[in-house]
Every structure is written in structure tokens, then in C-alpha cells.
Image 1 (cartoon, rainbow, N blue to C red):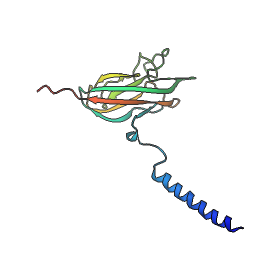
Image 2: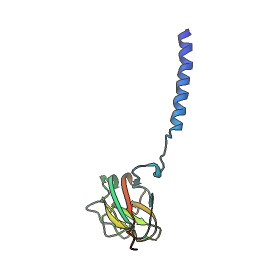
Image 3: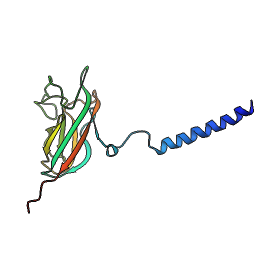
Image 4: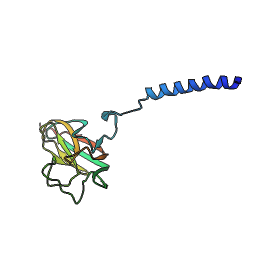
Length: 156
């Protein structure tokens, strides 16, 4: 072995160790929902909190974009599938299957969000979202959401 090889091997090991420590400190791996600037709502998960507490009467602005796999062979956006209506086994029947849904609190009514709009909280609690589907395990993808909450004006 030459002197050059003897010097390069330890140097390479030091570079690998320093890189490994830097990667671990910067948090490689799963990202917590609260850390995302635009929360993701995954098609294969049940109700998902976006980390926003709302109170009855709050005005909620939601904008959703992205695609998820709901119908065999097709991706579509948060507005759901134009052809497939949700049967009564879905969280909200009679509307588009695969549409983005919302709910405030555990007992709040389920409402269609789709690509977004303005909604009013009917109960206190965390704002939660999900896809309108009864079998989540065969879905893929996610949509991102932007949310703003405006409390009702005081009437003193």
C-alpha cells in the first residue's frame, strides 16, 4: 500500500461520519404534519388533523390541490371523480367519490371540500380532512391544503 492510499482511506471515513451526523441532525425521515407549510392529506389515511383548532361560527378558507389515486387506473384531484358517485358506505354518500371531505371536532358534520371554498365551523374542535372513500388501503397519493380561519366578528 502506498502512503497516498493510507491517507485517503481515513479521510474518506471522516467525511462519511461527518456527513452521516449532519444528515441525522437535519431530520431525514418522516416529517411531522405540523412541520409542513402546506399539510398533506393522504388518500390512504382516515381523518387527518391539519393542526388547526376551530370554534363554532369560525369562517374557514380551504384551498386544496394535488392528485390522488382513488379509481382503478386513474388519478384525480381533490374535487373527486366526475363519474363515480359515493355509495352509502362512504363517509358522505350521494356526492363524488374521492372528493376531499372536512369535519370540525369529533361530532361535527361532514362537509365536501373538493378543491376548496369557504366553510363555517358547526362545532368546536380540530379541523380534520380525508378522502371520501370506504376502503382506504388501495389508495395512493395526497393533496396539499392551505387553510385560514377567521373568527366571527364580536357583536358588543
